[in-house]
Image (cartoon, rainbow, N blue to C red; front, side, top):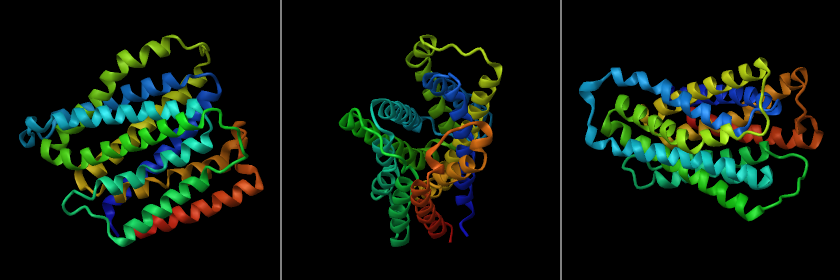
Length: 293
């Protein structure tokens, strides 16, 4: 078993738990802008303590790669939000799932990172599984082309960020690269996201709702640390993203187990949708097994 791949697996589980918490918070009036802003602040804070370790291994001349990675990550966030805002999630989600394909393609020029046939098969299975996991009752897409464009931009930006982390973190020093990268994300959030948070049309006064959001953004920060460590220290961005793609499966399982108790209405309980999502789960599990073993 490739033990470092367990980090993205843990990150996938944490992401699924975070998504459920944030789904509850969003349903109770928290704005998406607030989730984006506070998530970015948490990311910056979580990675900041790394600056106190491993100073002797730093190469500041390679730090600009961390700035680039932070910018790409932020663009990916905005693209994700805009794609979901522009149209139907049934268009946005399959396009966002293309990230794992983009990572595999962008890794081709990196020496020693060329995916083998099993990994390519895992990439295909992951994308198929992620698409099936998002199947649900048909909805009308309001703006299909902008939705697709924003989603593909997000997928490409996130994929490029992962490749920059894989190559740049060893060059700059992991404990320098990651704080600079996510410090850049937090710095961009202050002028670009905070004004939208202030303009939120639905103020939330329920402390319970804010606790759900706080839990969600902390879990998001933890899963980002797991993925950052997996790619920045151990490389193999393609394999890490295949395993991380199982987050859709874990989200489905968490939702099926506790959604009704929390009063969440979701199409996962529709029979046809459930069959499609089970098929998607099988695809993702097969992909994860190919990478792990």
